[in-house]
Image (cartoon, rainbow, N blue to C red; front, side, top):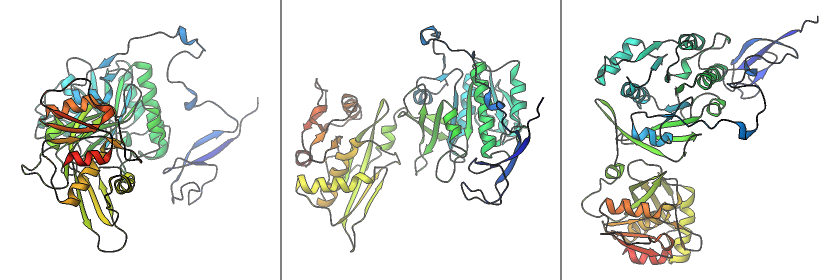
Length: 455
């Protein structure tokens, strides 16, 4: 019998690159003193931990032979969270929740488990706090005596051993950056540890049909720390964000195998924890009673929900040099293009003016339906004439000056009418089939016509 020779392998703690020989600097990412030995690997050997499948039989099946099990979902106790997840928590799914420190990730998940107590068996695993600190948080939420299983542990093999005999329906890991595997010598939070711990937890979720929430730290760039392979392994990636004023917390789905990725949920932080915001338009529309130039209300669309936000513009003559173009909450690359369309097809030049655009409340509007609102607000500021306070608008502006339709037209109109707006300017193709009571719909075909009607 021949014996395979063993060789050492080193892995970078920053970029996860592997090399056969240690060096002071990683050749892949340039980081210094980040190469760590990850064990002895047999030359020509195959298999190992990565060769084990998640679950199921190792045989080829015809697609028509695969069972059609009903998708089982668990209600989280938060309608806003269920909306983002696509209708609830899918059994056996793995959800990665990231967000800035102190934004409320642990509070949200602890509240979720408390609301579900008595309906499902759940376990909260903390690697950053003691059990006493978890109880103190539960006490602030008014649920210090909740029937909730809690564990303070950071070794992933020990956690899975505790759960193996009686797996819960729902498991929370707070956080994935604190876990480590005894099979690796690198420190917790290293790229190799995140990948290995994530793979073990995903495998456990699929084999035992356990839904798992993983709390993830974010970097200064706002993305989840660690290798991107972690986001590929999980089923859903959620980001917990806050508006600059700190009034609202928003959950967005960056990836979702069981629902849409453009849904958004709204929360507000109170002394008793996070509360759902069922009508975010009311918070975004805290406008002054007196209409001011440069302000217009946009009806935007976040997934299946219509939200009304105020778009403000400030147009002023520049102090020399190239005029400034600044946007907050809107697509910055479109502003120069829209101003060129305004000059060419509405005979109104702002090319020598500084233009500043802002979405009040901190919401990031990523759709082209904001084009018309941005231009009408800029024209209002430039002319120093306020738009009617009962006016709401939406629509995409094309390069030839036409107004192009956007999705969810009737739903946007209904939301504007619900909030008390009496006039709506929109693309002609989005005109509703039936009249909506108490609301005048002004369907237009071009930007020039929209500007004329807005006066």
